Image (cartoon, helix red, strand yellow):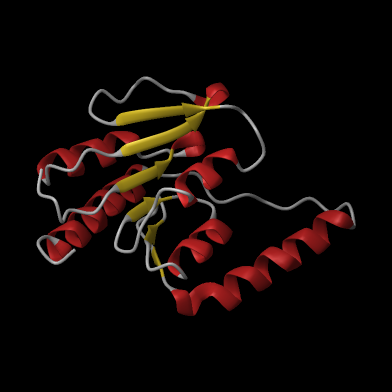
Length: 154
């Protein structure tokens, strides 16, 4: 593996696209670094390097945050965490293939604030729609395109 290649971390506690990550990373000769708490370890991935940590609040986020450097890539569903990463020059991609950018920060944090206010009032909030096969293919294509465009640059 080349020295200038970015590290690719996966917030693996609730990541639904591990197989797709493995396929794309294998093609680009990048070994994904899966980070999960002991309660969420999923040995289904045979390609990546797994880091299993204690089950504490925000443990995966802190583990990744303490290791990433500018130009690295993190795949996460946690948009607040993604905002924090982008401010450090780290690329954050959701399992639906959306690249989170620093310009998205205000809207993401406002939505989080509104969700928290709604929950405090005792109202239930719907989660995201189920991940469909088309969503998986879209993620795989977007990650492949992203890595192809950044190959040799990072």
